[in-house]
Image 1 (cartoon, rainbow, N blue to C red):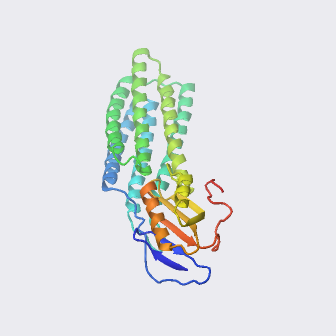
Image 2: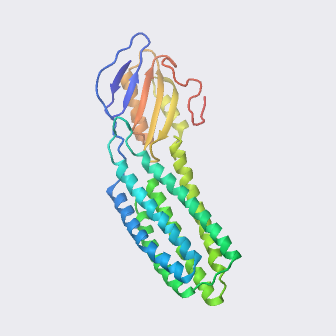
Length: 331
C-alpha cells in the first residue's frame, strides 16, 4: 500500500491489487482546536461576575425568604462551576496531540458542554421540587430586599450574557456557558416580577410560581445543549453537512467509479472529519483524483481534514461495503 501526502495537509492511502509498498515518512495532523483567546477571556469575566454576585443572592434570599432568589443563587453557584469547567475545557483543548490522544483534547469542550446541560436539568428539577413545597407550605416573603437584590442580579447577568453572546456563536462550549447565564438572567426577571406582585398584592405564591416558569425555560435550554453535545459525542454528522451532496460531488469526479465506507463526524461541531474509499477506473491518475477530491471537499463543503483511500477494485481492502454510510444513507 502506498501513501501519498497531499499539499493540503490531509493524507490518503492508495492501494493496488498487484503489489503493495509503503513510503516511510512522518506526518501529523494538527487537531488543536480553533479556540480563540477571546473566548477564554469572555468565559473568565463571566465566571468572576457570576461567582461574585452569587453570595449576595444567597444572603438576600435568606433574609427575604424568597425562593426565587435562592433558586437563582443555586443556579449561579452551578453556573460558576460550569463556567470554570468551560474555562478548563478551553485550556485543555489548546494542548497538542500526544501518543495517547492523537486528536488532542479538543473533544473535552463538547464533554464540558454535555455536563453543563445535565447540571441545568438538575437545577430545574430542584426548583420545581422546592416550588411545590413552598406552595404547600407558604412562607412570607420580604418584597423590598428581594426586589433590590433581583434588580442588581439582573444587571450582573445581562453584562455576563452580553460578554458571552458576543463571542463565537458556533462554539458549543461557549454557547453552553451563555445558556447557563441566560438561565440566571431569567431567574432574576422572575424574582423581580414576583417581588412586584407580592409588594402590591401580598400574594406570596407568586414567588414559587414564577420560579417554576423560569425553571421551564432553563429546561428548554438544557435540552438544546444536551441534544447537540450528545450528538457530537456519538460521532453524529455535523450540523449543516449534507452527506448526499458530498457523495454526489465526489462521484462526479471524472475518474471516480464509486465510493464506499464513508464516515462523516466531528471532534466538535466546528471541526468536521471525513473518511471514505474511492474506487477509480483502471489507469486513473491517483494523485490527480486525490487533488480534485480534496479540492471539492475543502472549497464546496469546508472539510479540511479528510482521509481518502484509493482503490482500483471495489472493497479490495475491506471496510463496510454493503452500507455506504453509517449515519443512515445507504446505497
